[in-house]
Picture 1 (cartoon, rainbow, N blue to C red):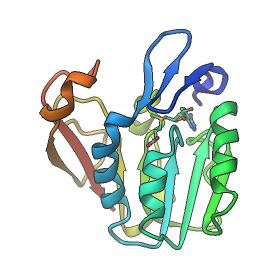
Picture 2 (cartoon, rainbow, N blue to C red):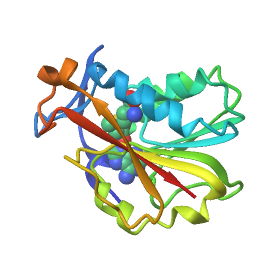
Picture 3 (cartoon, helix red, strand yellow):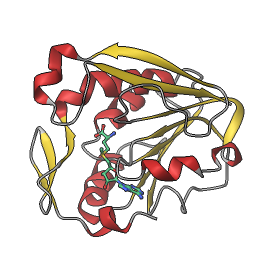
Length: 186
Ligand SMILES: C[S@@+](CC[C@H](N)C(=O)[O-])C[C@H]1O[C@@H](n2cnc3c(N)ncnc32)[C@H](O)[C@@H]1O
């Protein structure tokens, strides 16, 4: 779906991934407290976890720390996928998929938790048929840059409001001092 990330050239350092063409942050270590909350929520039921976008692997490490039954990660960018292959090589519960989160979700199982952080693609969440991939009682959460609650066509959505004032100076794009972390219960 998202051809841009597939062909983007990323500059990857220890604390940041930057898109070479736009100069925009793709991922930074300062986002770790937010990733921890997403990891806590997506793993609330344990079981099979599906994650969209590997990035720096920060949330992936946090999900792994919760020892899920399986942890499937879909990543579209060549350079990031190479890093994902290396990261996954010693993890027997990890399934990696080179492709697009929207079109390439493995259908051999239904998931207990899904975390979306493919970042450029929020619009597609409006049409994603996630209920086809998630178990009843499963949980979905997604990274976003919204300035307040906004419903991406999900019926049962709630928000955990996180105060991000303490690290806001690092951030180029949050427009407020709160992060609205969406929790969708299926
Ligand atoms: C913000 S980063 C993910 C950060 C990650 N949660 C972490 O903690 O490091 C977004 C990732 O999604 C990937 N991506 C973008 N569009 C995608 C798509 N359509 N399908 C799969 N991955 C995609 C990007 O290449 C990038 O690695």
